Image (cartoon, rainbow, N blue to C red; front, side, top):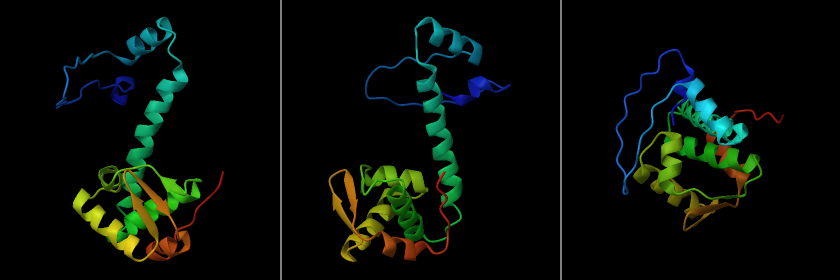
Amino acid sequence: MGEEVFSETHLRIVNADAVTNIVFYCMDGKSLLSVCVQNNVNLEILLSFFMKKITLLSSLIFYSQFMKNDRKIAYYLYSNFKMGKKTIYYTHEQIAETTGMNRVSATKILNDFEKKGLIELNYKYIHILKEKELEDIFGLISFFDF
């Protein structure tokens, strides 16, 4: 689903591939909201979906400030820890996509972090062992609690 349904220009170039058959629907924002109301869709769920997309995009912009990939991943792991997640349930591929790098590079860095004892790698999750050492990798960036 694209957030552009709520913009003035409703044009989106789509290239999709799926394992199973899929159907694409195209509608403007007013129609989408109308369908949601008619089908008792909680609008909070719809807004949450869009917020996840905004968060991902802002993360990609944020991670672009780091020139070195190890700093991107250290910050990614540390920021998840600061949000109360000592165990992170993401694959190497998902971490790579979020930080704007390829999976091979992300896996290499994560393996290096594990060798240094900063994290423990498991199947589809990572356990953070030494958050302070992760913070030391990316340097001086402030966190704000709201």
